[in-house]
Image (tube, rainbow, N blue to C red; front, top):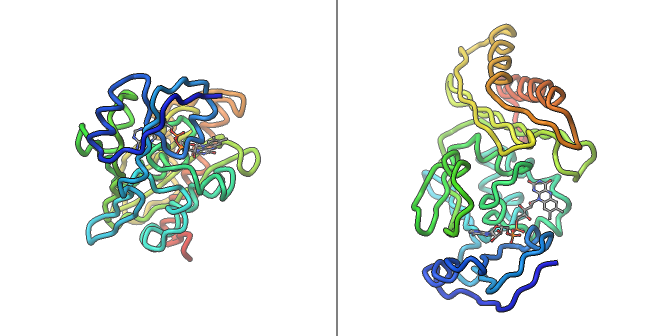
Length: 264
Ligand SMILES: Cc1cc2nc3c(=O)[nH]c(=O)nc-3n(C[C@H](O)[C@H](O)[C@H](O)COP(=O)(O)OP(=O)(O)OC[C@H]3O[C@@H](n4cnc5c(N)ncnc54)[C@H](O)[C@@H]3O)c2cc1C
């Protein structure tokens, strides 16, 4: 159980940032992860009055405010049209609708969970994290940064016409994933992200010819498996995860080459 001494609805990001400098204070999203711990929170800082709960689309990008829920992402028409439902697919197994109605994108990405579905799919897209103090950084860079007291303001996904597919493997629906796999493609350039390794999602970038044969695809998959570290936990061993990564990656590459996406 966690405890909260004081609760403040922040009136500005500046106020929230200043309050969050005190290590006893904590930004709260949907509080679903926080409630699993035993943190003794001095002041809980609520960002919900700052208008950060919208998904805005313009010609170049989508901007998702940190207080948007996973359910809002799952059901957003613009995101589903542009990314062929891959974002929806990435969150559909996260417990249930009630939970996804509460879990925020800010809490999900700030935490950089080793098991994260949404982190995996966003890593295979041209995604940026907007920080209050740290400015805009690529999601890949953010993954390597420490869990500090900056505020994650929004997630920006560029519309660069990538095709993307997402899949995960779970021992049972709604459990934490054994492995997550997103594959995206733009021209000859391909991106794969593997998460729940059981470590934070990891990105590989490579090229394939315009009509790759089986040997070319198998060769790339073998390189990806060599470059990516897979570990063992109660859900699966490293060798099993490595094999699974090859299977899910190949299926997604072939499906993209065959023109498939979830909107079909
Ligand atoms: C039982 C359970 C099962 C789950 N299963 C899965 C799963 O299968 N796949 C998956 O991908 N995820 C899973 N999750 C994670 C879930 O989807 C959310 O990512 C998680 O709950 C965090 O979101 P939240 O809004 O609840 O964050 P909170 O619990 O409110 O916050 C989490 C952390 O983020 C910080 N924080 C929140 N917002 C911000 C911000 N804007 N700026 C800076 N820091 C911030 C908080 O201070 C805290 O440290 C699961 C969670 C639970 C509790």
